[in-house]
Length: 267
Figure 1: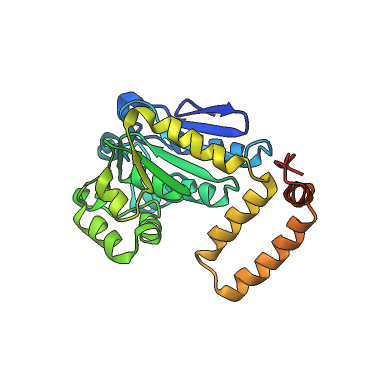
Figure 2 (figure 1 turned 30 degrees about the vertical axis):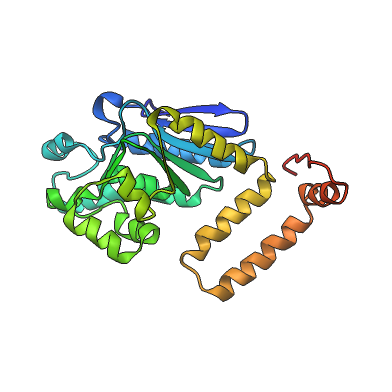
């Protein structure tokens, strides 16, 4: 893994930090995409991890794409020919939403500053979003004569609804953290100095629960976004049958009946 993403662990919580503060954590190179994809896959494969936090180093979460790279045709966007550009998107930036959709552990976006363009879309890939008071959000592709090449047109409307997503995408205007809270783009706004602590506290409330059930519950929720009720009922029955046979379920029942705190092992 390269240096675009820093991966730290605190017990069973992973912290992913976008680590290019001098460039406001913009995604400029194919390797940046590969780094984030690799980090997401690593925490998904780590059975000791039960929750994750994604944040940015410095004063931005992510300022989106690199306009200089676009102008010079040597980054994650345009290449020498439209056919090459299409392949560049498929093989690069579009791998990020696919990796996040395959991520089994719950992930919290701790949005510490500007989340613009691709940065806003990456935040939308997380299960829960909390923002610092100074954060700003924009789906600003249209202002550059572009469209969301990373799946943002699919993502944003699933978070805030079609009408509000259309307003953000078609105007490209930025909104404040308070406005993001009002439309449901984030679930909480906190002082910048306490953002990571708040994210860790929230992750801590998640990871006290049985690890296998957390992963199955997240998978059900993601699948439910694009499935009908009958499909989810069948999937729920199958996963529930597995959950009933786990050691942690038995421990939870025993602890409840014995009026004590459960001790979960992830089994």
